[in-house]
Image 1: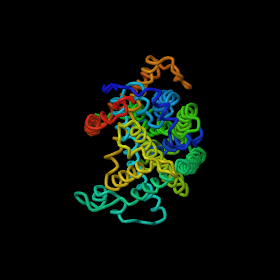
Image 2: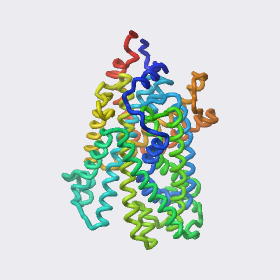
Image 3: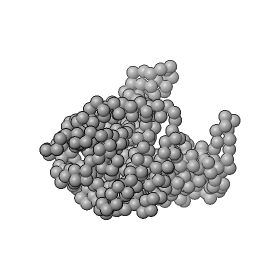
Image 4: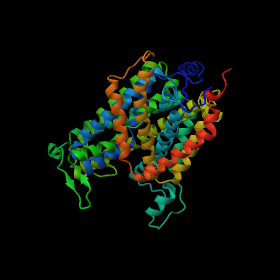
Length: 484
């Protein structure tokens, strides 16, 4: 078999994988859509809205959400086309393996670990923070050293450095989610559905109740005039709206997790593309409405940065609503975490089936029909890292992995149109000659907006991945074995 690092996995091999898959096909199109909504709507809608409106966009936050949604739409249409062609677990990794080549696919798979595993870690820490706020509403105070990592606990206690501490809440919620995932995809989907119903109900509650407290004067001016600080930092104006779009873009991350569940979908060729687009459209509409209500209830320059939605209702004389909103944030983050960890294990499963990772990652439980060993490993890593690491150290790394995957898949779908124009495409991305290049440009642009420190960490992570590929994965690859 060819030893080139650009060797591609034949379509026939993907078809063979689908036929012998041991995973349960139980997910309907609405079950998949629920997973997408579960991954997208989380802490972002309750936190990022405050920062983006207060510092950058003002009431035009709604426009920023529209711009970010357009950028995500380019990638989602490309994902949808690939999902209809290759309805297998593995998401962007599998798509690129069949179109561009093994090394390219490995880089994507390696960096999807940043999106899913670091994303789950970030969410676990954020969940701990919201859970602590929820307990405060009932007058319950837990020791700082049990609700924070050593560095954050040291800061809160006024120390000059870290102190012995362990974020037990983050650790605890990770293992609850891990247990659900080990039990089976049906149980995971049911749990996610319940949580999605709860948080969608609360988001709709925020929109409908908050609308009665909107003051039109708070929307004036809709796009505040550009302001330059003494240090040269700019705010507001159309430039501020674009900056806000790059911030709230990360509130959309998660729709791609739907494509990792193709191996458990009843009719993946049709239902996965439907769920990807439907979850993105539904969440976009909700984001826009929430942003309009929020900036209408409270003047944008007085928004609370940490809990803007809850504080807006508190200022409106509705303290009882704070309980509901905080509970929704806790529930929302739980479902995001569930889908992120679910996606990670399915990417591992796809890579292990191709021989690029050890067999450990593809062992399926005889009763639960889930990759239980890799799920436990992911749970262990996420629980320990989230208990000991500050949230800001892992959050941007999550975004880097996502942006790279979005850009690569947008380019790959156009490449496949030219390589294999006659292949069956149950769903075809419209105007692919425009959509695909725009998907690449939009996501690469956002990558240029990330801090230098994050780029350094990203390059180190990529270097480690390349080393692993050449020392292990290239030789163990199924494509490297002689044809029998």
